[in-house]
Image (cartoon, rainbow, N blue to C red; front, side, top):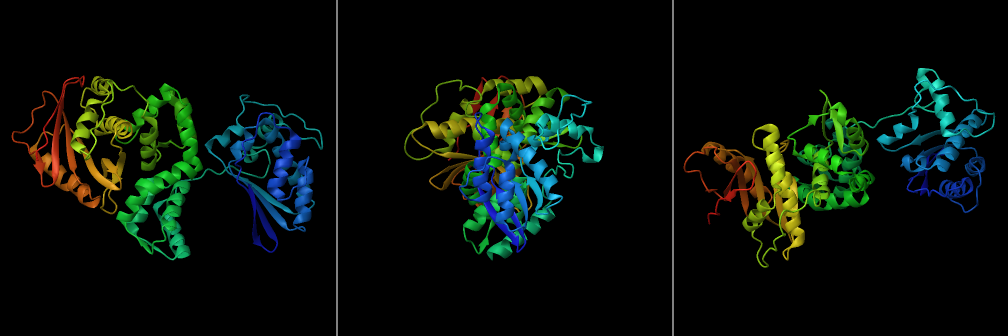
Length: 494
């Protein structure tokens, strides 16, 4: 749907959301009829782009106008729409040299827009285009590659591709400053920093978070209020309304087992993985979808903590079959220890054993986090007792990157929290983790029952007399063989 933005008395911007998915049966006439309604706002039928240009010129009384189309990939994906529209832009640009009313065009889209300028022919020959005719996309691209290097970014001669960069922390601060001024509210520095970290500096995600915050009509928003918004309101809003997130959801529905396995590897990595050349096709797909980004030193990482939460919530319900019939949770009071023990029994043993085989050491905490998250979500959906599972829940300390691994929530009550550890054998390590991490999470998120869960392979010697409870933090020891078939879970101490 289009709308007019009157920038001043003599300049008008036509903005089109680009939300039409053009059908395969599209004709030039039906394309311009729809575009005419979108761009001019009237019901007069248009059959060519030239008609629309003339109507706009008349409507604007020779004001200077600009055209902005969002989701340009939708238009370029259809052969008829692409040919007609590119020809229209080429023609209107030429016409505007004599009649200065068209100021320019901005098309916004995804990483895949770059494919418009790709050609399999490394040395294309320019194809002459008859004066006044509409060039095809192939002709446009061949003309493009025959131009001097300075013009090789667009078939329109005077244009360029601009890749949206992630915001820096300073830029995000300026953005929040403008939001606070416009809505007459205060967003504390620690909330600003956490939103920035949570979104990875992605402009669309960051502005969506700001939108949800402003809709609450707070005069000020604290870190604790933001955490509650982030877990429910922001997460649900992004899944329903943010186009990048919707594209990721659609992408995940279409991928094969190999790409799922690669995403699983990214999730289980503590930070990043090596971007090997043999995986270049998969890496390109993940970059185009906004899921991953390249880092220095030939590394690949997930694009943001939010993306990790999204992937965990969407991808792993069916990534591998449950090894046994899903147990039904008893009705009545929620029992986080009972839920934990059931979830541990549902962990896919092959994932743990393959990690041992590949690395010759204990799997990382991230591996256990992904597996437990999968099992907990199944339990929360499948039993009589319903609950939600959240991963990567932010710690209270401003500027800290530490996050609670898993949290259980039902009826607005955080009834269980799990901080995961691997191969902690010393008494001091256990006490420090319980006091300095788990207890902070428990207090800040008002968690009814907090657990420090320590996974230890058989044969690893632990200190004697390890504590089962430190203050209000329960400590659970899970000992297991390398195949994760023989698993023992310590009892809960009341």
